[in-house]
Amino acid sequence: MILKNKFGLITGASQGLGKAFAEALLKKDAKVVMMDINKSEGEATKAEFDKKYGPGRASFISCDVTNQIQLKDTFNKVVQEFGRIDILCNNAGINNENMWEKTIAVNLVALIQASYLAVQHMRHDHGGQGGNIVNVASMSSFLPAAHAPVYTASKHGVVGFTRSLAEASRLGNYGICINALCPSFVNTSILDTINHKENLGNFYQFKDRVKNLINVIGVLETSEIATGFLQLVEDGKLNGVVMKITPSKRIHFEDYQNNPCF
Image 1 (cartoon, rainbow, N blue to C red):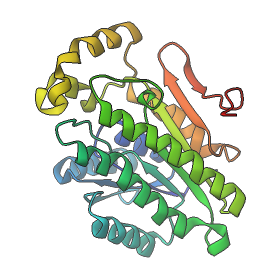
Image 2 (cartoon, rainbow, N blue to C red; image 1 turned 120 degrees about the vertical axis):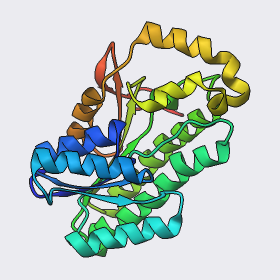
Image 3 (tube, helix red, strand yellow; image 1 turned 135 degrees about the vertical axis):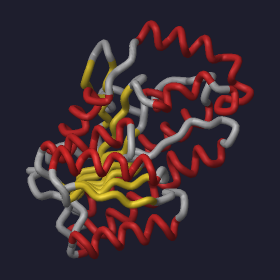
C-alpha cells in the first residue's frame, strides 16, 4: 500500500506505541485519526504533530473503545469526515489482573468490535476499497506469563482472531490484509504495571521473575516496533501473518507451516 494521502485510524494513540505508529504514518504523508480515552494526552499529541507535520494531518477523537456506542459513532464520524478508512491499527491495551474483565474488554472485545466495523467499511465484496488492519498482540501470545494470566489470554486471543479473520478475508475476497504484531518488552507505560500490586493483584509475587526476564531479554524502543508496523501496512502481500519483534532476532515471523496441528 502506498501510504501517501491514505487515512489511518489508530486506537490508544495518545502515547507509547500508538503515538509511534501515528507518527510513522505521518512521515509517509498519510493522514491519521488518533483515538484514545485520555483526552488531555491525546490533544497534546495532536498539537505536537500539528507543529511537526502541519495542521490537518492528524486528528484526535476521545473515545472509550469498550463503549460500543462511542466506538461505532467514532467510525461513522471518521468515514463521514474523510470518506474512507484505509488502515486500522488496534493498539489500545491495558494490563490489569485485578480488573481482569476490563483487560479482556479492552484488549480483545474492543479489538474484535473495531475490526468488524472496519471490515464492514473496507470489504471489496460490499463495495469498499479494501484496506489494512494491524492488531497489536504481544510475545505473551506464545509464552506463559505467571504475572499476567488474563493479559496473556487476551493476547493469545488477538492472534487467533487475527489469523482467522485474515483467512475469511482471503476466502471471501474482502481485499483486506489483516495481520498481528507481537513485540516483546517495549519501553512504554504498560511495562511499568509490573511494579504495581494494584495491577498484578495476586500475581504480584511473581514480579521479580518477570523483571529478571526483562533484564535477560532486553527492552525495545517504540520506533523499532513502528518499523515493523510500516512493513505490515505497506506490503500488500502479507495477510494472516504474525510478526514478532525481539531484541535478539528483531523482525521475524511465526512459522505456522512447519508447526501443523495435524
